[in-house]
Amino acid sequence: MALADGEDEVKQHIGSIALVVADYDEALAWYTTVLGFQLIEDTDMGGGKRWVVVAPPGAAETRLLLAKAATPEQSAHVGSQAGGRVFLLLHTDDFWRDYERMRAAGAEFCEEPRKESYGTVVVFKDLYGNKWDLLQLAAA
Image (cartoon, rainbow, N blue to C red; front, top):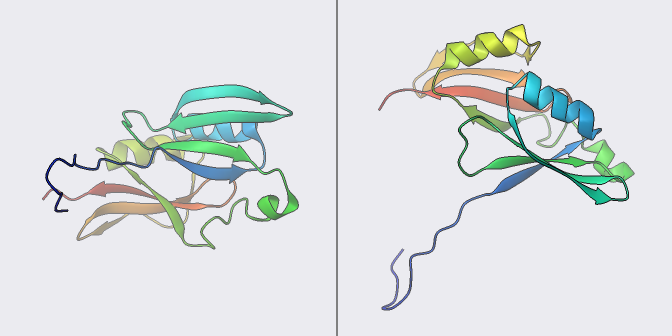
């Protein structure tokens, strides 16, 4: 992007992605146990609302905000945030290490792992049915 004289370069990143869940504690347990995510924050906001943030180990920027459904409309979207498509892509530096750990922890895989031109990938579902890719990109 061309900048006018004296303008600073714009720097942005996605800090958190909100994931609608049915229950804070069950979601927190699943993401930390099955996916091995780290708990970043769990703050009581009052009135039954919490600010619950998790992230994959080593994640520097993007985190997952576990947002409990508070209305019937929100509840209807639990497990279907992307309408049945893959919603999130979890990149890894060691596909087989993470695949085997997740499998042993009870992750539900939708297929067998496969090699593609872009890397090694498998689709799995979270505890509510949202689809994810576990992906190790091919070396450039």
